[in-house]
Length: 358
Ligand SMILES: Cc1cc2nc3c(=O)[nH]c(=O)nc-3n(C[C@H](O)[C@H](O)[C@H](O)COP(=O)(O)O)c2cc1C
Image (cartoon, rainbow, N blue to C red):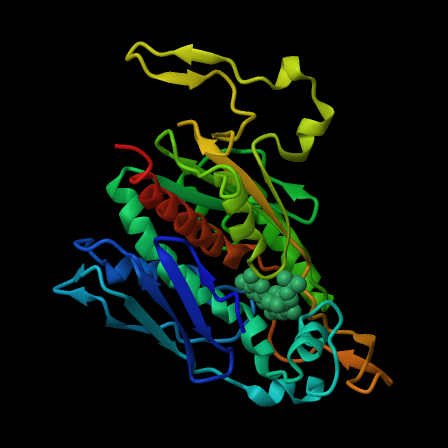
């Protein structure tokens, strides 16, 4: 299967299935001499893991990881970093009922037709378990970015029709509530909504917003590897993502140029910034030094507790009933995944930008 690699210089390859021996990542191109703080990797894995609260799936996956190579005395050596997470909580029999059937809006039909063979246990490679490997790699990417003063913060800004309009990036607020919203009173409403939907056996969608602060001017490689294009690909590669917009996004279509143009201004220290940021921190595919902001829409995921019409491998009509343990709303767990993918894009462009001119 092609397509398991991401990045040009800071390049990751993820491997593994949900119910196989484990999952992991090989990172090639990590500069030497980076302090690899394993506690930061663990922290982000904990934020993604199932079973962390009453509003996510109650699977209890062990996120213990082992770094197999690429570090010495706690620092990166510049050689490939291999990181492995062994699978523990596999209840493969939870999935035997869908071995020959296609779950609606899942990856079963397309994997079966494309490869002619499908690991149906836990969704195999299509399972969001794979994103743990991305989160681990993203945590290392964040360590490099923080060396350059850059900070990436994601939070839940929408669940169903409940919206947070706050733009706070206060980690204390975001991590103080189990839905990871940046407004605690809105968080309460989101949590109640998710619990209500869970009781109904249904699922609900949402939006994760992300803000990248202190980005230097110049990241992004026109014309195909524009910064926002690579961020879009990174986000759209996350399971269950349906939409990506940055800056003014789809609202731009309703605006006039006179409203939308970001006027330049010179600060007292001589730095140039813009008075507004409809560009979302990217112009011509290159970061302009303003905060980069974007939003990622997640669908209500496919597994619901209801009899749904479907077909089996032979095309016979059948029904599928949601079994096993699943997420009623994935956005609380998606926050560290969005941050990780953003970090991977930014660090790759940071390293690429070091070769653009003498
Ligand atoms: C953190 C996370 C958890 C997920 N948990 C579930 C789940 O419990 N049940 C489910 O049907 N899909 C879940 N998904 C989504 C599926 O992995 C995804 O819908 C499936 O692979 C099909 O891919 P697509 O929706 O991108 O087309 C989850 C996604 C993420 C990001």
